Image (tube, rainbow, N blue to C red; front, side, top):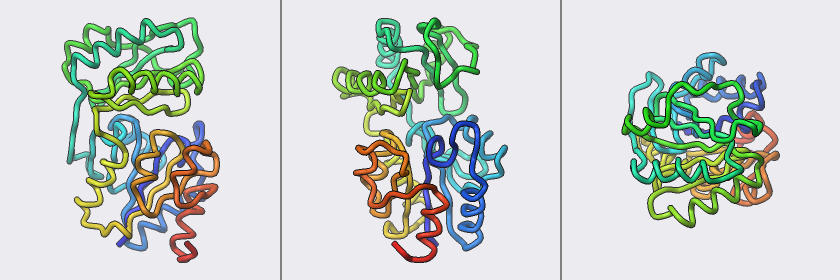
Length: 259
């Protein structure tokens, strides 16, 4: 039995579509007796809705960039939360940073959007409307992850670097295209995949993963059988053992033992 872990947005889903050949390859992988996990920055409700809508057979969901883990039935296997005071400081910093368009706070299950500079185009969350105030978010005391939507990808890289410089003892920030994902310190997709590997009792040499962005780098670097998407930035591709155009191509290569 092998375990394949895939990022979702940019690796399995492109824009609003998933390629049927990728989905067929995942189903074939499962029929062969293997496990499939999605490792994403999304919250539980968001990715569970996606998996249901596209009929993706998933054994494990690693959400919040490794901050929370669920089995296929939605049972929570692991959880982590941001320090509340640090999270509040980051919310304040967002309003002082002109390149921050909005931010999304999730507690691992659901997410709430706050508009920061509404005159800027929101490339990541254009169709999500604010439903809570900042006061409600702060009072909830359940802050699993903050995702900042930025003006452009370069601004995301610079803002992530700044967060890691000034708050790096409490959180870890990952640039992710137009976003900056902020997780508790020490949490990453790599730690999430490690948990699933041990929980499912799969030998490390039988674990495979694929991703396309900077938040996938810890997972790609920490997994021996890792593949970066051919569309990934060069800095991301350097951390994968291989580069493949699609997840389906990667699965086919594993099955044919050509890698």
